[in-house]
Length: 277
Image (cartoon, rainbow, N blue to C red):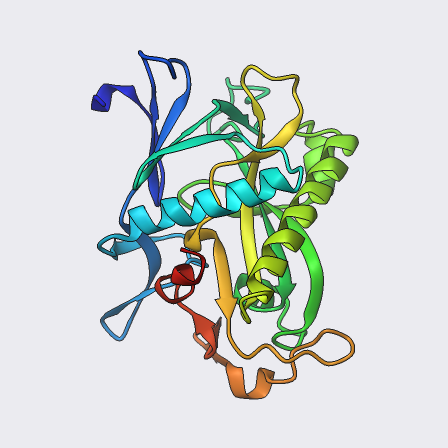
């Protein structure tokens, strides 16, 4: 499909508008080999919890597409509304066009004004990553009961409070409640699926939106892939759901006024994805 039909280029996939054929008007997702992570001691470390593309993993796109297909079909079978239609190639799927949760600029005449292009929602089973860095008074791997946070999605993701979403007019109170409930329901299904494979989901992020030709109902859009999940082995919770292995698993550092946290038992996408394929 021609590059001119490109609708959006993200960190891990490209979105094209289908302009002819039986699926005219739908969107085509092309899952790429691009991967996010960070550079440590001159070496590339791939980690879906980071926002920067640091390289390619050959074959990643095809595997991610198969993985996303598995979970979209599972969610649909569980009654979760999504924009998924069909998978047509090893790294391509067809979806209904959807409008991400967003908001136009109220006063564009002011320099620096910018729209809210779209939101993504993180959910966390355990405290790690940016959550622990922001709340370092919490012990690593603490049970967070799938706490949901909203972020502006872009080159640099920015946390935005749920109260602010309502006050700015980006979402109504009822839409926020609906979104949080939907994210938690999806998170529970995904977590249970991994638990059945003796793996544990630490946290994840989903994108929500409204179908372009729908009734305005909020549904799951974008993808469910190794790029949006952090998974670990050996999860051993106590009665409160806190992992008892945090002293052996979590490593932290603090220098130059910056905190880092890593999980020794975190599983790379390349490792856990094959379990479902």
